[in-house]
Image (cartoon, rainbow, N blue to C red):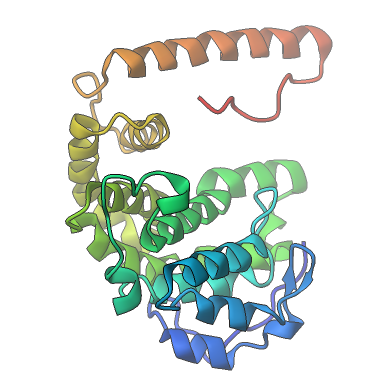
Length: 268
């Protein structure tokens, strides 16, 4: 964890800068990434808008790989997240095909891949992660982890780009946009959107069989004090009961050996 430095001049947390301004106005070479600094990020990020789908996919891999490792928010993560959010409605991204094989990773549209990365990053900086950090490192956790704090402060700007995609024509886009919107909406200025998000969540639960998406949405509905008794299917109930048994066993291990059991919940 390091102290965060300003990425752009006079950033406004509730406004999303233009993607080109982010690309040109960020000192990428000074920002830490997974392995080194981000001097190659401008080329990779610009390549995400390449009209050639193969070049676009390669650039997306290269750019996101530099800021994706072990649930960590790096110095370069915040400007990358802002750039990704700013290009979600770009014509090149919007023009991609959403055919029958679009859910298969090699064919997954860039829009879905970018939303999935924003979603994963938002969960890495959500209230639960912040609370765990404070419990382990003290109340000043976010003061020493400026990258996470900065991402959390900018959630309204990122949400502003994700929100329109909740009504996208494609179901996969709508679903991944919803899962991304849920942790972003933990920001205090966005809590009023939870009623709307709950409506989208009911739609997802009525139509989707994706285990990960259903788990994320059901967890959010419970956090928002929504009754989910009529929304769970048989697999949801079985998964919940399986996790309850695992948690009880884990807690019993912690009580007997003093280790506390596993440090993370299982990925059901």
